[in-house]
Length: 400
Image (tube, rainbow, N blue to C red):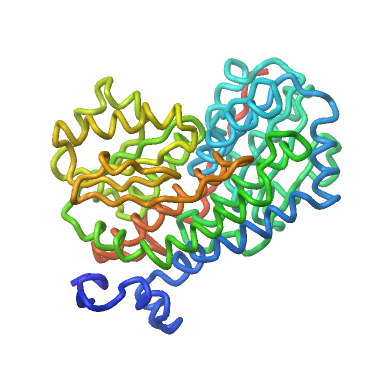
């Protein structure tokens, strides 16, 4: 029997989990993951304040001083999904081409995938210790000297933060140590690295406003206090697959949500991420009676109309077991009786960033509860298969 199944209907499942004594949380294998999910509203405010500091503004100014023609965001696993969230936001705000390229692709195919310089490569990393992270920076410092580098990491002692201290082409932004998640899965590190990447927008009209971050933090806290038990109840439904939907910056968030569910359930729940419009072109065949659909709605009304049309189509075709829909507006007619809608507040400058942050939190909770429902431990899912930092592997020389 799972830890969730032991609770009665009268008990508040989430309150029981988060008020358990630390020893009980550790024994059940969820202490780190729960703490790191719950700390996000507070850490977002800390990261936002850091971005407005003189030291960070100087680091960003140095990184952009050469007026790069391209910006490339890189990382591995969850970190590249952060890049996918940031790319459309940065391109819209900076007015130059921005794209996300996985560190593995840069390591093996840099000549064919890296745009012509001069450019700025932003390396996103929780620990900064994965083999390909340093391998890519070292490779491009040697083979693509016209590219500058900005490292954004949660670990002041990681290789990315320390190895290039004497290299003038590398700038480093280190986030609060609390964001260096101890759990195997990335939660607060993901959202804070995402927020950290918006440092490049400081001083532009596209920079997230303080009110947007405060609203996102308040919405996340409200989600914990008000909606967590409903998400836990959804996690107890008999589903074996999940589809995550997002548009624009939220597509990276959908990819991250799909990975969180896959990681935390050890592959027992099969996942897929798609755009709302892309789902119609074949991937809709993945949606079965045992499929949960997680929809992260855009704060842009024009985009949201397309997204809601797709959700209505899924309801009309009676596809999926249930939907979890989160956004600043959730029309009643996109929800069936078995669905869950979570409404967040409307903000102006930074609305898309705020929507992505809250969508990711909802997806984290669903994966967390599903992991517990299946009798696994969120802090160490897939034990013996996955490790918190990818094990060292040989970095082979690349052709010049």
